[in-house]
Length: 420
Image (cartoon, rainbow, N blue to C red; front, side):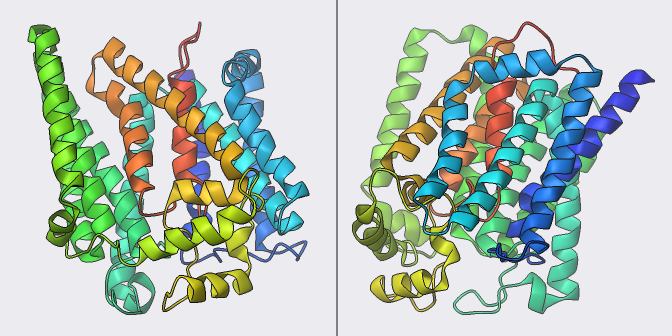
């Protein structure tokens, strides 16, 4: 009974965290809320983050885990430095108030993600994502059919492509591709345990394919292929790992490297398969200008966390310089956006966090040798590929960052076991 109450309490907090982490990326909230209004949407959002984070700390205190939570933070000092940098960057930011707002949002999301990572095992977090995906799919399909002017793109050249509850089809497709891999992984677990839940996971997996198809996003298609291949490879490895020797792994690495070389030397045919070109729908000239004309102005410390794209005049200037037909709202590359906001120093800290989380995820999967144990690695692979042609780290939402931090804490060696 006590454990059931604990699960319900944690589930409620995680549900609110998922909602807030996706809020600004939805079509119901401005991407760049007005931070000059004290009681406006921006600061109400911060208040909500504060309330949920406070509730999480009360839970930690009640369960006598606050000290253990702090101990895990001490083992992730690089994360502390990066979060501090987001606040300090307000000193040289293009917009002090904007950066302060974005840094606070980022800070509370990080605290809550660390809470989840310290208390949840992978299978429990996958359960939470199961319900998140189910609700997301229901609302996205309802909007696409019931209110197509809201749930679909209404400008060329992707008029009619589904975007669901999100502001852009690439965002919907990317999240859907990630969720499809979660459902596939859960299906494998359910089949092995002869659990009837596999039917529902299989149904939602098929729904994810439908949404991906109508989103018409090459980004989503590529992320889907990468993540689903990863899940299949992980399942095969779990079945055959006891038979594999050093020579087998050398051969696998060799084949993988050759495949990557083949893809990189034939980008035009590869992108042509998705009805795209190697210019990536105009991203190449955009990235060239941002590197030479924006990043070069403040290469080491950037323009202030989250500030650059909030100014319409700057977006208009980028549109003209990059020869775009409409003002870009993001750099369409998560790594480049971090570089714009926090410069080379910020990007190096950020990459350090990702590398540590990735290494821990691989070790975690190898040590546990279960399908759910590959969840942290799945998150890290998604974070990398999803941000190559879209910005999903901390630009219009903090959901992917939330998952990265949760994985970082989930895979941190600890003397106590998670409660869920």
